[in-house]
Length: 198
Image 1 (cartoon, rainbow, N blue to C red):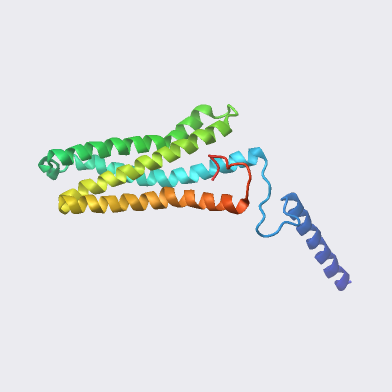
Image 2: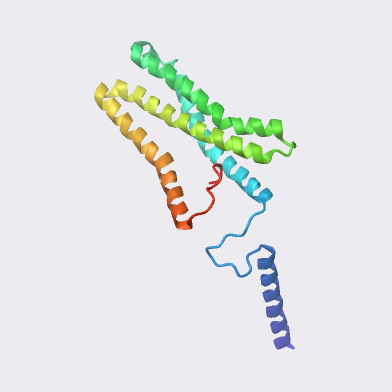
């Protein structure tokens, strides 16, 4: 009786395992294959990804923007020359613009919630995120220029900022584009990828 009970439990586990795999659409799929998504699942996944990315970017831009706003109220600010003041103003405007772009998806979602426009929302939020990341990179570059211009000689400050901006361009833009092209070459001649799809 114990043997039959153990055998019956094993068969039951195997049935549950097969049922779970087939429900998830993974029965017979290899480890590298992805489960096909419905359009609704894809748009929900993309929206969740945008939310996660926005949280990371918003934290950085808000800390940086808070720092920039406090600079004007320090005693040393009065000693800055015209060039440094222009860079400061430009940096604050870029920081505010980056903040607006990166928080915009939240506002758009609030206004359009329940309107069955999630696909449009995801497309708009993706574009705003790209715009916000460009503005954030420029804000960081201008912040570095402002700080380094005070600390080191002008030419060295500009060279260092140029090097950092080149690094941002490589990490944030060139690398993703290169990876996308490499994946497209491996996949062969297929329709172009969705511009909003990561």
